Length: 76
View (cartoon, rainbow, N blue to C red):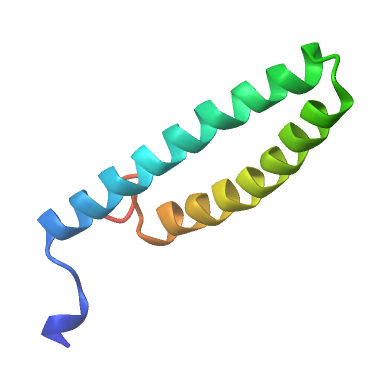
């Protein structure tokens, strides 16, 4: 059982990576929401909406990974 639990430094690196992914996705999602809210071109709005839907799914998945890795500090 010793090899099943990642070392603290590996866990920290994983948490930092997931946090960076969440941050990047959040920024992109914010930009797409702005495009949707202020856009006048239906084609661009549709593209932004599709991108936002994809990013929302990716964000949810990354958030689950973040919680599963116990990056919130409660499991360490």
